[in-house]
Length: 449
Ligand code: HEM
Image 1 (cartoon, rainbow, N blue to C red):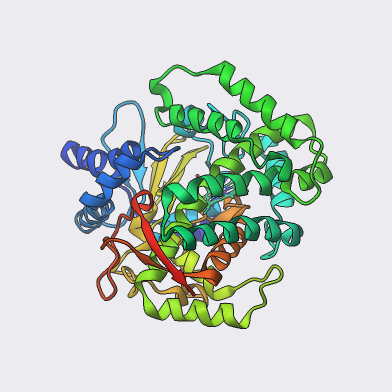
Image 2 (cartoon, helix red, strand yellow):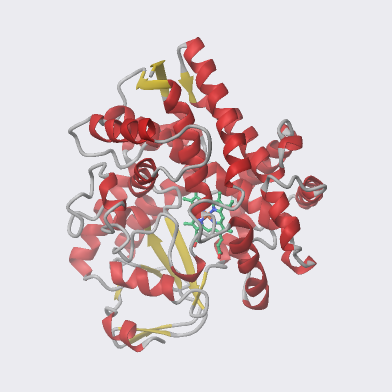
């Protein structure tokens, strides 16, 4: 273990039955109810009405006040489950992944294993050593503009330009107008234009993801999983050189990489980006300052090819801070770990509830305000637990690619129209940002920009 990190960590405390049940009811149950792998729109609407994330954040802050900032060990039979309450402890667990803390947890195996048996988050040891670099290379982890930015920009812009035009004509942009366009755009980005209309592929993946919401509670549907793997492999060849499939072919992965399962993860992860896009659009429609900042940036940028658009990108990141799409980061300890002089056993499940850290008023003066600036001046990046894309060696290798995709899509939508919410929602300029924001009920009225 890294000595400095060990010295800085705090002693664990133990929650009684009442507090454990409180965490189960207020932190875990709403996430499970809303669909951890494939969101359930009705449950999301309920969660927004009840502002379930606020209740969870308040409970964990109270428990931190009562028990101290060390890991809070829940009273769970047969397993040690520790909820992290301190920003530095989160940094330690993420930095020491995967050696001390594996992302391949029991829960993820039960859920994600239904459609990506060899997926990146389910890989350990030598398998991870092969699959992680494959993901980093194909997704071009470190470059703000992917090496395929040019062809990808054309696909994304074409789809969103058409959507913006149709929205302008109909006078409406709702989730149900946006969702099929996004799915088509993602198929074009991942597999190329020949897959644009393969709605059956997305439907098959979605049905397996809905089953994955039930983790171990339902039997596995092995034939559907095998069919998905076959269809994904078939879509990777012949590879369209202007899509991620082209980058997969260039990387020439060996069979142990199981590229079909890596791709299944990408398609699944691109769904989160759709939620982020709609929430960013809603935040921009509510806040005149950021909206003006985006307009100024778009007016100065060209509209004929890929650009970084740092301000718009910061708005996307800020919406991810306020409404993270991965609210739980889970890690299982691979060995005994020391915390402020005490030892938690190998196999301990460490839980990071990201909204607590993204919106912690005891540490972040901007906790509940839409403040894109914090992503431009280094403020957010200096926070060890500011983790919309996780952190450390297992952080999201698709971060740059997905930020590019979402900013490109938003730029195309915003170049044509302004968007105003059709009905008053929970986002109101001058008020703290709502803790839960449901994108499925959003309806905008577009007016020509
Ligand atoms: C807004 C969209 C996205 C968000 C917020 C996001 C966030 C995350 C987070 C939080 C993790 C870590 C999960 C954990 O530790 O349990 C992760 C992992 C990962 N993401 Fe993303 N992601 C997004 C989109 C994408 C896309 C579009 C791709 C691929 C095209 C991608 C590829 C990956 C991969 C391969 C991993 C596994 C990394 C590993 O295990 O080493 N992500 N992502």
